[in-house]
Image (cartoon, rainbow, N blue to C red):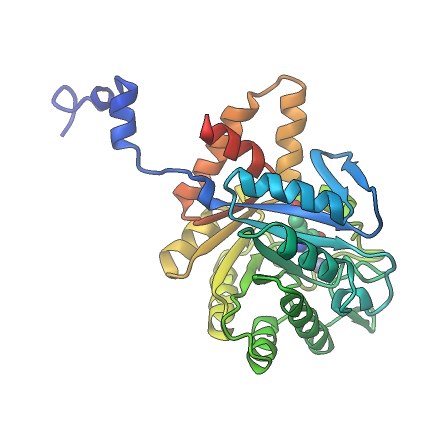
Length: 324
Ligand code: PBG
Ligand code: ZN
């Protein structure tokens, strides 16, 4: 059917028609808000490259989490900035670590808000890598043991879901096994299944104080040039027991998101990472783009590409815009 029989504009002529034929919708239920919990008290320090995002001590995390919950956002994703870091990231799996204390406070003070924790070593190691260093590189198998302990301690403190982001091989299986052995077979794992070695994590490393002190993460995170490998990574994590799989970063990898949506039926998450946020905020501050319009368009793109869950620093703003 071609012009003049077909006129694509007929159903674009009014907002009512546009609403009726809209293929993708965005809801507050789709959102997860990341937060950075810092050891200490009275801390609320804005990340210079991420306007509106703060490192905060527990009482301030709790206060903001209440606001997040009141906006209808179902979950937060927690990152920790410990008091001290060491070679083996001890605070990551300490019962009195920064995340464990934060989880307990949130579960006590903000009922109904799901607490998801990032499981990784880089925020807790003095060298800033995502695992144990042996012979100048991150050692896969000895790291698995620590990641499993970390995940278990998060869940014992009350975490509702754990999200391993380290990119070690076999970590989903190791975490699933330790959780099951300890009676937490009902706790889901959201795996950062497809995580690329990306320049877009730059601002996050200031926020989490997790910049590698030597080298980079290319020996464990994925090469941005690879597409088929994403399917392999996702299939492996599903086989090991992942409940939700994630693609990260978001906007530069929409093709990968769509590939995973077409291939797998598990819920699919996307992480709209720090650098993506900083670029939008920076351009909006200069008046170069319209922030609300650009952010909502980006969120819609994630949904259209196949995401069910969007992890984003824009979550609070999106919730407010959607409620208007
Ligand atoms: C930890 C982790 C990172 C992010 C989430 N978990 C950083 C990294 O891998 O270097 C990035 C999140 C963001 O940029 O917003 N492994
Ligand atoms: Zn890490």
